[in-house]
Image (cartoon, rainbow, N blue to C red; front, side, top):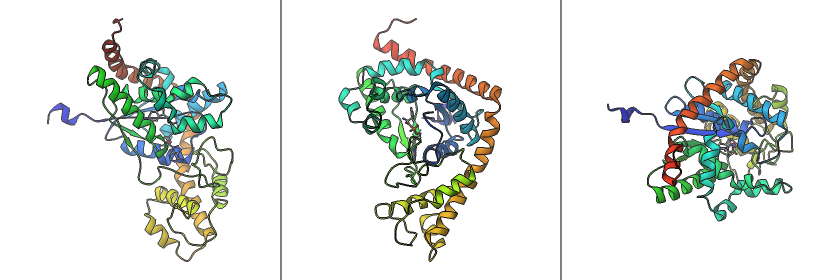
Length: 336
Ligand code: TYM
């Protein structure tokens, strides 16, 4: 077999350290990162530069960035097999983002759902970074000639604009960037809040019972699931438009246990929601327990974490330098 045929395809994905990691980001993204990590050449990033588009407390941001690194590893991402790094440690991201800003249109940025949501939530701080966020995200992805971007449903639009920007650039300068595809799981791509299941589970959720965090204690998790909003029927059936609460719990249970919706409906036939909610809570407690315990151990080992993010930044810098040099040459910058 020739070398090209056995060359692994590339994955890039990232999560903002703007809050504690949630069950939503675990099921929608990280779980798939782990599953894909054997067959792809993977770059998994902690996107701290994206996080400052919303005001952050500096010491919280620093702590959460390191905790997120520990949690990535605890979730099963082997730092020997994957490149795990902090975005601000690889300046090429900011450098390519500036170039791509000049190939991204005001009109297309105005249509971004995340921009509209975040500017509504942060009306006193609608800054330029929040608006041009997609150009930085496009830089993250395009710097590594990424084939696949495993994300939850809410990030699909950002991967699409990345493709548009890449195509526009390639249209002017030839085939510089590879066009990435989003990878969105069939189940778990949009985990909803436990208390208002019409809204996405989100780390910025003001209602403490609506969002489950990877590091939450088993007692807290159990309590949140017992209080989860359902409906006035007593029938466990998958129907997201009529039964958003129950369908959300079914999704969570399905991803946590591997059971299909049909199997779940059968398991809880004739049983009340009380039993069902306890069982879903237990499945999440057991899913997260080993991750939390391992993350706690790693968080205490600062030297180890430092060695991982330093090595990750070196590998990512080496991998991204080539494409940045090519872009600079194509657009007419004099070589350094
Ligand atoms: P972020 O930090 O909001 O979310 C991280 C990842 O978790 C997924 N996710 C969910 N999936 C299912 N249900 C939920 N309730 C849920 N909440 C979050 C998100 O879809 C995402 O995959 N812009 C990105 C970060 C980013 C990025 C990148 C991602 C920056 N550069 C390059 C991929 C590639 C974001 O805000 O994700």
